[in-house]
Amino acid sequence: MADQKKPASFHILPKIINGGIAGIIGVTCVFPLDLVKTRLQNQQVGPNGERMYKSMFDCFRKTYAAEGYFGMYRGSGVNILLITPEKAIKLAANDYFRHKLTTKDGKLPISSQMVAGGLAGAFQIVVTTPMELLKIQMQDAGRVAAAAKLAGKTVEKVSATQLASQLVKEKGIFGLYKGIGATGLRDVTFSVIYFPLFATLNDLGPRRKDGSGEAVFWCSFLAGLAAGSTAALAVNPFDVVKTRLQAIKKADGEKEFEGISDCITKTLKHEGPTAFFKGGLCRMIVIAPLFGIAQTVYYLGVAEALLGMEKK
Image 1 (cartoon, helix red, strand yellow):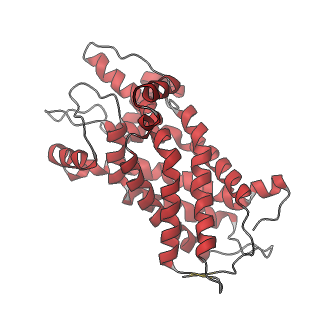
Image 2: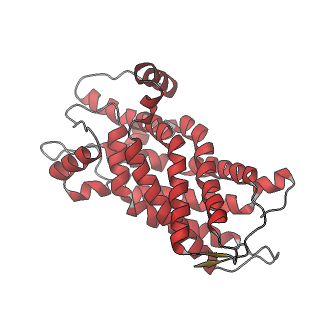
Image 3: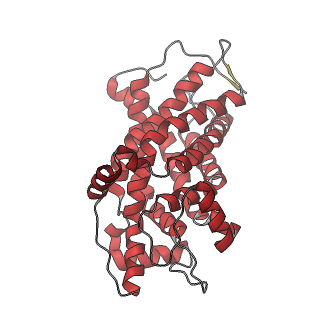
């Protein structure tokens, strides 16, 4: 149970700005690893056990060799654009619900921390789903193109803007929300695990000497690393399902999925339970520094300094 003096007021604007800044910095640092994670999760084992990438390092090497340095950042534009509202919503919403659920005597039970995290995860999927959908198409395009080249075919390159316009034209705004169920399953579960664990770990470390009661810089960073990697591994099966459902273009011979249960059933049948942990190590390596950086920037209170406000 977290004990804290409940603040008299809650300012949402600096929370949103801090979340946005944190998201941009974090994504810029770890995007190449996220691209590798997406390609590993989307590749399906062929009938004779053949696969394009043998490991995380093999995928990184082949992608860099075929597409160069900037190829490792394919899809980063749409991700950086939408990560600002996504991280802002996630981090600010969690703080808001924690503030509202804290009792008058300053107590916040673990169950309430989990509710606050879950609600934050539910709110973020409004932005996360279209962001992930477009990002995945851009990230996986190189893998699909390489598979097509081996088969003597070519795949037309499509930008994120063209893809978004095409989806909206064909299916309306809901075309951008393909896989929203799987996204919600992943993000709500992740937040239920991540935020209470982060708060618990963050409370264990030393406090700043300025009387604010906040954890020192390195403590927030390490708490973000530990909580992020733990939550990432726990929800990796949901992330695999979400990634496969959102991949619009498949390589020749790859299976199509009708929904969450169909994806789980077919993946389990043809690739076994280990398939649900494809890209697991890579995702942990991505999420750990992403949230370590994000939480550190967030807790530094950059926005409060820019706005001339006292950090609360």
